[in-house]
Length: 105
Image 1 (cartoon, helix red, strand yellow):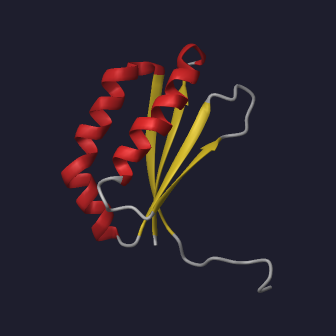
Image 2: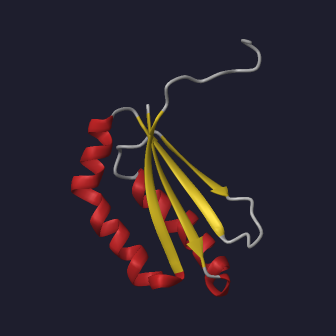
């Protein structure tokens, strides 16, 4: 399994609007591509409280590559056009090597 993690630092002045938009528009649009299994929205715990991480899980690197080639630039452009430099993102690709369940240990 592959996790495509997008970390976004959001200016306080747009945080409410951004959170609403990301949950109602952006994440559903990414999931509608059919290439991801799930998404999680998380808040990074730190002093300013304005950083969020969105983790999209897909089955294979091929699925992620299809997303990047066919959808990513146009979806990212919508985010940039709407929020500009008030919501700055960076992306990380992770591979899940193993899941551990407390009941199995």
